[in-house]
Amino acid sequence: MTPRTPEPTSARELRALLARPGIIRSLGAHDVLTALVLERAGLELLFAGGFGVSASAHGLPDLGFLGLAEITEAVRRMAARTSIPIVADADTGYGDLHNVQRTVEELEAAGAAGLILEDQESPKRCGHFEGKSVVSAKEMELKWKAAVRARRNPDFVFVARTDARESHGVDEAIDRANRYCDAGADCAFVEAPRSLEELEQIARRVKAPKLANMLTFGKTPVVSASQLEAMGYKIVVAPIETLLVTAKAVQRLAEAFLRDGHVLGKAQEMLTFAEIKALLGVDEFLAVRDEARPEARDT
Image 1 (tube, rainbow, N blue to C red):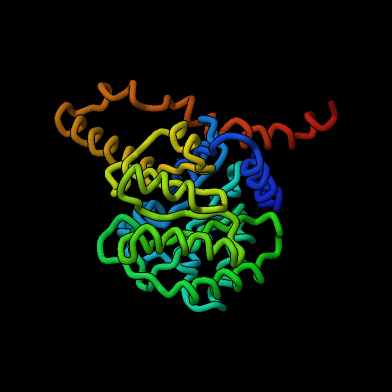
Image 2 (cartoon, rainbow, N blue to C red):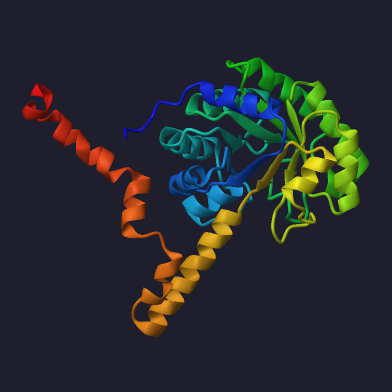
């Protein structure tokens, strides 16, 4: 099939998922192939995270190296080849209020169904790194009001992330999440709670639909989607696990090749050549020539 043109229906589909009973499961996609695999596996929502895209595109960590143009291009490529909603990581909005507005416009035009905007000071860093600092809650409220003014499609979903837990404590983080949603965000995301008790507190005290970030090896205890749903969370995301699994698989493949001189011992861990061709739509693209032949048009 040819690349699809992103349509505003993806945001409408995300709104429908949010309104439907049950928790939404999402995995991070660091490139288009990963996004295709996740969609084929049955995921209903993709997360285009800054950590994964920065690592995949540049081999660089999540320390503010990724800019608006790069995350927008990553989303555009994913949206052109998939049909499920994508939530984009917009970091801090890449600057002042006018930059936030441009970020909303660009990601919405690229085909994202929604975005995550966080309250870290620039330069930002991964939410599970040490040494984070945050802007004032009043400044972040202004950013959210600017974002709302820039939104063209009313279905486009805003997720408010706060990183205040580390420097200000869980009570301040909860207060900020509620304030940001009052300023226009649709969902709340308190990053890096440190215990099951904190996860439960957030679920009880944050009014809006809530996103839980279940980073393997991160600061937050990992609990199941069903447990989070019982607490009151609406979205659960494993943000970079596809990246971690891919890196480990490639590492083991290289080790086997260097050891054995071939990789036949890893064949059971691979898609077959036929499967990857089907995933990429090889037959559909090649059929274009057959369909264009005069004898095909005459039948």
